[in-house]
Amino acid sequence: MKPRSKRMMLVGGGVALLVAAVALVLSAFQQNLVFFHTPTDVMEGKAPTGKTFRIGGLVEDGSLQREADGLTVRFAITDTAKVIPVTYKGTLPDLFKEGKGAVIQGSLGADGQFRATEVLAKHDENYMPPEAAHAVEEAQKTAATVSQ
Image 1 (cartoon, one colour):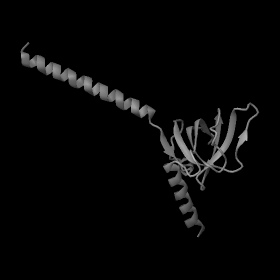
Image 2 (image 1 turned 60 degrees about the vertical axis):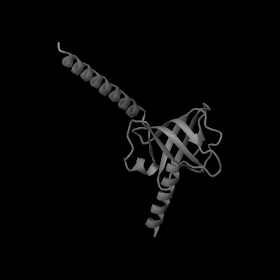
Image 3 (image 1 turned 30 degrees about the vertical axis):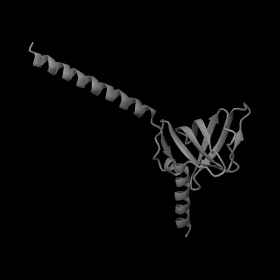
Image 4 (image 1 turned 135 degrees about the vertical axis):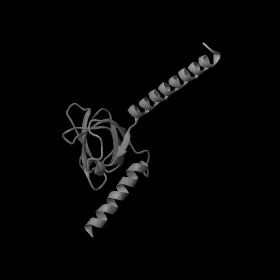
């Protein structure tokens, strides 16, 4: 083999390895990507069914119910326009309360029930995740224009 042919084979092999590495990295990103949706998005069918995503808004007043096992909790999350029922099994954050902002990660069941795997509560009295604050703001604007 000529030296030029050897060099071309090495370059071709290096490019193939680089393409394989990039494909693996992109695949890992795709698998770990978690999108944020509002309750309105979920009700309109914009959220994926059977895949993990986050939903945020306010915990609806009067919706918090604890099961007899002490770990299972049922509540509803709202953006003031739509309401999604949520089931979570685990310990809730100390700051989790009705009427306060929260972001919940999990998946939507075929029955419309959101099964949470993680619950995140606000950090202080004025904090709400930017996506949730924007969603609540948009839902209030929509509700105001509909009622006029």
